[in-house]
Image (cartoon, rainbow, N blue to C red; front, side, top):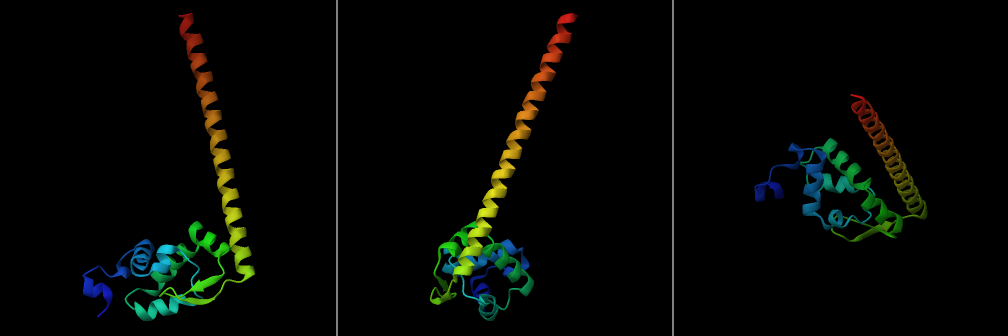
Length: 142
């Protein structure tokens, strides 16, 4: 009997990838800590939790390993870990560099987005001020 059946929890495959990820975080500390995961960990998860649909697991792992928190851990990490938290391989310099580059690009896009939003807000404020000035100008003529 699986853990979800013994605890009475709804089977993770019934939800979205976020539900599957929440389930993985509840069951495995390596997900809660967002440490670099061992290569091929999806296979071990499927063996231990066959009730999780493959597509849902893939989506959940993609969300987890693409998170800023995970990428930061990968960029700074030296070891990868299995589901039980045991070292299971190394993070290569190439993987660290790739994670760092992804973070840099993500932060750059975020800064650019904020800059554009601020510019749009300034322009809207200026537009509102000009409309208010026009309204006052025409209201004083009456």
